[in-house]
Length: 112
Image (tube, rainbow, N blue to C red; front, top):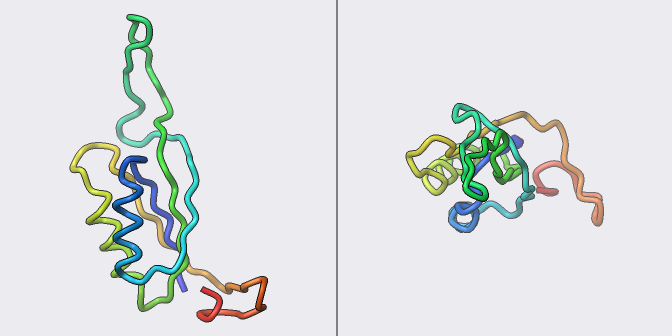
């Protein structure tokens, strides 16, 4: 099993969610986060003055999938979150030792 964490632009959430459902992802957790990468923030105009915003609003999507679902899940995120502009986001993949569904106490792939 793998945990996939994707940092995306907020307006891409619905498109990413639809793409993930199409490839069989059964659930996800979405959090509002703030950060910066290559773009190092951005300039915005507030009351007629330029203000540097260091932390840009993003969404963090967390998904745990079976090993055989990893590539199609990544491809779905890449295709649906892409705008071609700086700040499109990142995808992180980590191994997951165990998953346990609290309600039924199922473990492993059954708990996903």
